[in-house]
Length: 155
Image (cartoon, rainbow, N blue to C red; front, side):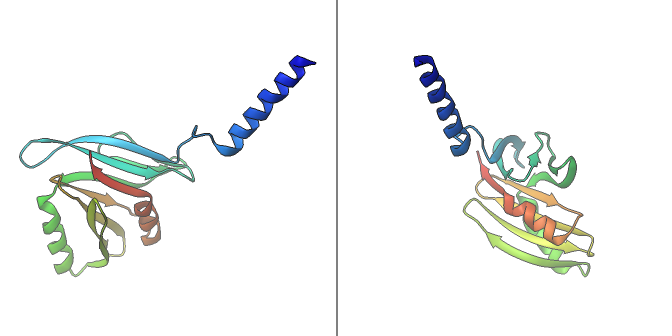
């Protein structure tokens, strides 16, 4: 009889843990990459992905964002000095169109379309000497969805 109450209590606790999550699962994945800046200094960059819905972030560099085994976007680290070069190229190229430009706490970005076939973000990570090209050949909508799941910061 006493064992029965203990078993019921344990089962009740397990049920509560399942329904509240109890901090067991995480909806984000953070990868820290060691990247060299233009002066050959090592810089830690954190790439954070909201993984809800089955999205995955690879550990390799260049990194990939995947869902259901399919690569949707990939990111490559570049020197921060190239950010302005990309911006100038996008503004002066007849095949490109700036779709968005913005700034967050830890980074600023431009989002552009190249020849209606590629949808890329160039992201300047503040105070790091590093930028990221986030490329997507799927669609404008898909590129935006991936970008909204990501954040970047100097580690």
